[in-house]
Amino acid sequence: MGLGHIPNKRILTEGEPIRSVSQSHPAVTGTHSSARLSVAVVFFIHGLLVSNWLARIPAVQADLRLGSGPRLLVRFGSARVTTWSSFGLCAVLALPALARSAAALAAALVLYGALAGAMDVAMNTQAVDVERAYRRPVMVAFHALFSFGGMTGAAMGGMAAARGLAPLPHLLAVGALLAVATLFATRRLLPDDPEALAKAPQFSLAAIRPLVPLGVIAFCILLGEGAMADWGAVYLTGYTSQGAAATGYAVFSLTMAAGRLAGDWLRLRIGSVNLVRLGGAIAAAGLGAGLAVGGVAATLLGFACAGAGFSTIFPITLSAAGHKVASQTGVAAVTGIGYLAFLAGPPAIGLLADAVTLRVALGLTVILSAIAALLAGSVRDADAELGMSSVAADHGH
Image (cartoon, rainbow, N blue to C red; front, side):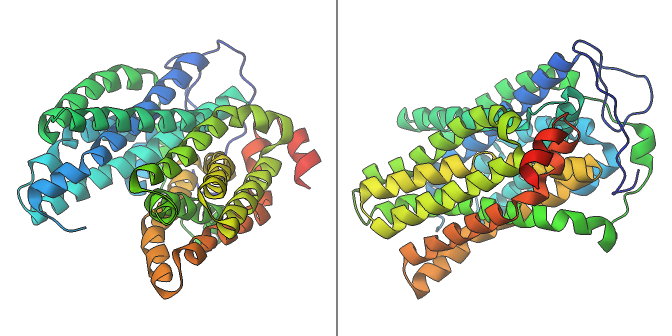
């Protein structure tokens, strides 16, 4: 199946067995609800795996005295890669804690990052396929579970650190527990079409061009998320204590999670185009005003607006990418662009802050949020195959 081809799908009735979107053979693996539950649990597991490790970075860093997969998906399919990468990430979760040198830690983190990236792309591809089978929005809710998994994992990591539990036994226990959960969670994933996997995707410029606006949106939003995660607390220390400043990212995370809980409900009522446009505008206006006014209260309100505004944009962008072209290649391309921004954005903000001020540097996030709002029309495909074409037509043109 080429990059630009998506087969036509009929509407499935509730309870009818479903298969992967790309499948043309009759094999089935479960009902709508079981497939949706499987993907939901995988998203929650991913949040737990990532956040438990992030919570123990300071301890590993102190021990070492350190200073401050799309091709797989195309080759093997999203179901296999989701399963393999989930088990793999559970297996290597404790590996960084075993490192006894900077070089060993770097090698462990490369492996960890590769598996986390593969799992991220594969589970989002599964989510796009489940959403298409459901014929109604469910994508944002999956990302809500990732957010809550992240919060839960961060709390687990914090409790382990507070009780003096070393990173190695903590991460080994979490990895083993989540491996068992993965065993059950991945049993009902949608199978992949062998015929589609046998055909190499066409990565021509003409085929990829439709994804460019979506990639820009992903870049803008994930750079903003990275900036909030890495610089939000630092900025707030200019107005309050370090302990109190930590509430900045907590507020951002909570409003993002809340926005994701309501995201699919809002998509049904106002359409994806309007929701992305509204989210970008809320983030730009709220964060911009908070930075302009200054002070703890205004800044926290600005961070809350950024979390709420960002909450639905990236999931909807992935949904649009998966519906615009073959799901595995669309999701992989947009995710790769977005996470490049997530990794490169915070250092760029830091360099800009050195040249001007951190307040001005964070203003870049305001500009990027506005750009995402302006490009909202490009997510129209997120609604096109979900029985929402009338909503998209009414609000998207």
